[in-house]
Image (cartoon, rainbow, N blue to C red):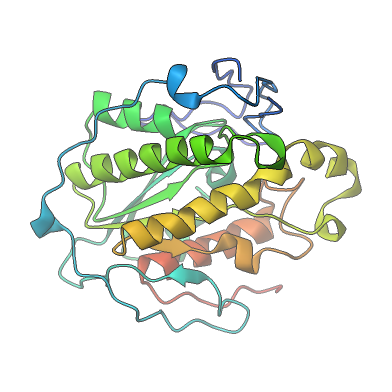
Length: 283
């Protein structure tokens, strides 16, 4: 895969980035990014091994009112927006910042061209976790765009068969709320979160099926929490990559983008941001 440039959240080469986590049961992180598989006790509590980053103050006057109006989209992208969130205000600067792991890094060279007139900044690295991303944003408080996109969740902790689900969900929810508060404190007026792809086995390349089986089981858990996030914070938009990506030819494995997938992902992000997307040739 191509190398990614450095940025304020260091965009490191597309190489293995080890993520150290506390020992917890059939819990995995860093799917398909060359990261280690982590196992732990299904009865262990996430709160006992993790520290919660303090939430950044949120200024209510910077949070636009929610809207239920969805963006008109071309055929094939009708479900690209799961929740519209705040309306895009035409008076805001046309600037968009993406915080991502290895998945949307695959679209970093395509997204700017898909959004002419916008300043697009893609920050991240493979295997980036929500808690770590927030810590790095807070430690180096570089302003973000008026629209901030969070494309994280593939590298998160869960128990198989919903073991200790409520505790893991509480941990994820807290980290999600914290990074959203941090992004708002850095200038984001609209926050968009991208759902995780959860494809049928029939659309995953045969050589990636075994690897996908190690991780795909918890992707629906993350998407459940993103639905809950939209209920808690109705100004947050949910760009629904899961709803439009269950087709062949988009990824090298189960999640990492091929050129066609990068083009489709760019349009999904645009739709989530409130920018009218374009049709994707080849779909």
